[in-house]
Structure formats: structure tokens, C-alpha cells
Image 1 (cartoon, rainbow, N blue to C red):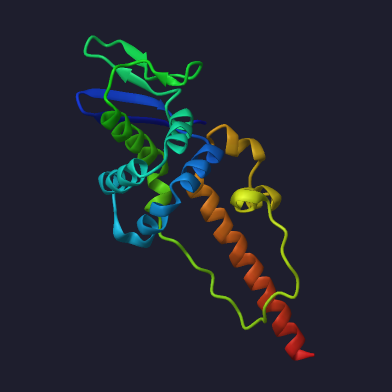
Image 2: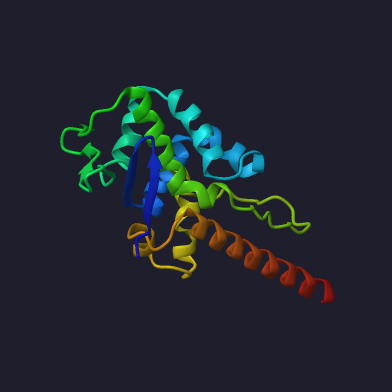
Amino acid sequence: MTRTIRFIFGEHAYSGPALNAFDQFECLNLLSQISERVRAGKARGTLDQVGLIASAVEALDEGVTERLCALCLPSLQQHEADGDAVPVWDADVTDLVVDMSAARLLGLLARVIAENLQSYLARERFEVPRGADGPLSYSVVELPNGKSWLLRPVEAGMCKFESLLDGTLDLNHVALMNEAISVRVENETRARAASQEKQ
């Protein structure tokens, strides 16, 4: 079931469906320069994240900003004082429906991204301690742009592919499943090594 984001920005309230895991992942990749800083714990809470994301968005070239708008704004609605809700973005003409300055647009975009990624960016990361195995003796083939990480839980049977598309799962869920898979793989590796030592 798709989560709904709701927030106040300036004098208006906004709402819309949360991005699916694929769109969240693309946003994260487009803003890669801030993701490590936030995940390292240097910022906590939505407001801190908005500041970092806004700084990153302002530094992006126009093409990347347009792509973020196309990802984040088409389903967003602005709520008026009379109770009416109007769409923020017209996907057909790739432009704003409501009137706002470029600076305000960038701030709104940063807020939408933060609302969608806050649980992932604020999560405590778990690094799986590795055993004493040597380096891999072969090259690993992976999907481009980090999508192997995104689809790893699907391949492991922990979730369905559709759950990444329909909003049932977000990046926070995907990250937790990846950590659980890594724990299982490491434990299996240690169990094999212990078995061989006994022989």
C-alpha cells in the first residue's frame, strides 16, 4: 500500500503519494554527494535533511534538476486556503502548474525528496563483519547504476518485484533486507569454514 506524504511548506500544505523504491533509488543516485553525509549521522531529522538536500539540488545542472522534478512533482498537490487542491506539476508540458519562483521550486523539491528518503537517510547502517576469507578470485557481474543492490531482495525471495513498484516497500526496507541477506551469507561462509577446519 502506497504511503502518502503530507507537509507544510511556506503558506501551503502539500500532499501526494510517496515515491516507489525505484524512483527513490534514482533520486538518491542523482543526489549522491549528500547521501553519505546524511547516512553517516551528521544530520538527523527532516529539517536537517532538507537543508543538505536543498544545497545539493542548487548545485545540480539543469538537466538533473528537471529529472528530479519529473520524478518527484507529478503527483504532488498544493492545498489552497479554500480547501481546493491543485496539481503542482504538469507532466505533459514538464512545467509548473502553480506560480512560484525558481528558489521556492528548489526548496519544495528538496522537501519532497527529504519526505520520501528520510527513513532511509536517517537509518542506522549495519556493516556485516567479514570473516578472514581472501579476496574474490573472479569478477562479479552487476546491473548498472547499483540496481543489483535494489533487486537483491527480490532474487533472494524476500519480496516481490511489484512491491518495489507499487510503494509497498521503500529504500529503508530494501536496505534492511540487504543487510539480512549479507548476515545470512556471512554466517553460511563461516559455517563452511568451520566445517572444513574440523575435517
